[in-house]
Image (cartoon, rainbow, N blue to C red; front, side, top):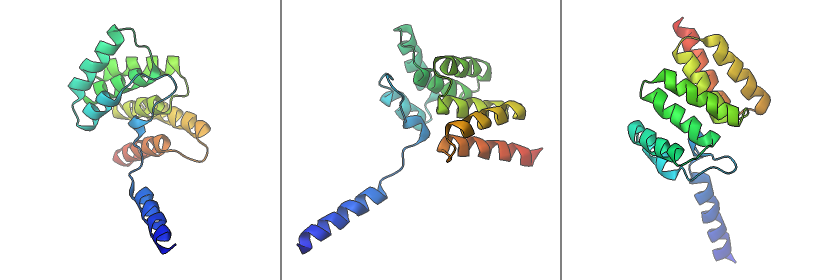
Length: 149
């Protein structure tokens, strides 16, 4: 019996120590396998992620997750104009895509359009009234921009 308690305690500790999922590891329904793309993004290999995502699009993949991650990778590579195009495509496919709303909002902050960033934060507040990581991250970006103005 004592061994069972020790095993149960070890299992609970293992669960408590496991890392939380990052925003860009969450997939929505019907998403293609984006594991390799996410690994490239995590390693800050944005060019590699862009190449892989473009290949998927050429093969006919049309999914909000792919568009959102392509927008993210493009933004991180400095191509804000094309990034905005892909965030809009992601939101055309899924207007409630939390990742795309966050990332587009962060792009708005980056280009100085705080009003639109706040609009995205309002949409995220409606989607996750109890709060969510996407909303917290966008609010952090907005608050950071407010401090520098």
